[in-house]
Length: 84
Image (cartoon, rainbow, N blue to C red):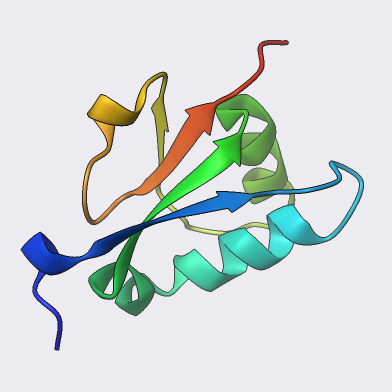
């Protein structure tokens, strides 16, 4: 098993807001075993992903960040790339 200190940071774009990318990403990282393998950084807006998470009734724990220096291993980091 990969130690958390050795986890790679993986950047993921949600793609089209009307597509299934957000759902696929959230469902993938809802399984916390995935967070043992890598540290995800999703390029999106944390409020929009939170709305989608609530709509799908998922338990994924999102961590909103504004810059890469705020990444937290073991969390689903969401880099706010746009404002509402």
